Image (cartoon, rainbow, N blue to C red; front, side):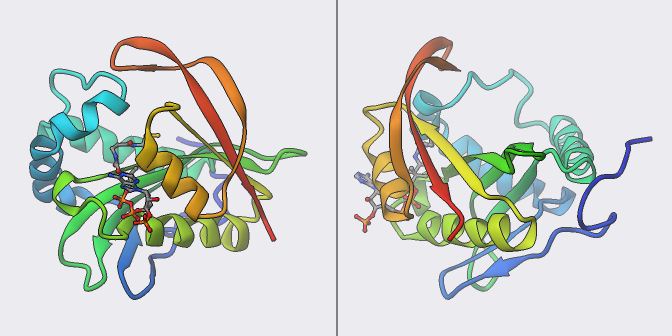
Length: 191
Ligand SMILES: CC(C)(COP(=O)(O)OP(=O)(O)OC[C@H]1O[C@@H](n2cnc3c(N)ncnc32)[C@H](O)[C@@H]1OP(=O)(O)O)[C@@H](O)C(=O)NCCC(=O)NCCS
């Protein structure tokens, strides 16, 4: 049994919304929309992501994904959220606070993707602002980090719009599309 360290004591972390987006923790009921959106966005997303496992879009793999999400939440290691439109009907993307480090760091790493049909509609701006609120006010973090490929103009623009400042180039930071790639590091501090 997992050692429970979550500040939510086994309850789900809260759903959060603004006028454009709703973010909430994923469950099995999200599988159909998630698998369709990921499949139709594959060419849009894959240049910026680790290589997708062959079984990635199967229901079985999604079930394992959900179980892992809940272990991570229980252990205060990561907080995965799916992004819906403001009425909560249409899944548009996802973002995750991962690698939560407590003690003297109180830091986590932010990752995100939007489905291609929903790109440039302001969903990720809303979602990042909501998860910043979650990180700083609900779980008491002090700092959020994010990294992106230097030529990912969409991601750089998003981070700057959401108050993240550039901190430098990290060499060979992540294996993206099968290759170790340098990344620009960004961070935002709590107010
Ligand atoms: C990066 C990404 C998450 C942005 O999501 P989004 O919902 O489209 O972002 P928003 O509509 O909220 O736009 C926020 C800002 O990002 C920048 N941006 C978004 N798409 C852009 C594009 N195609 N070209 C240039 N800038 C772009 C702009 O600065 C934009 O602000 P503006 O519309 O006021 O100019 C999305 O493009 C994506 O998933 N890309 C592929 C995967 C990826 O890059 N993941 C992140 C890896 S680090």
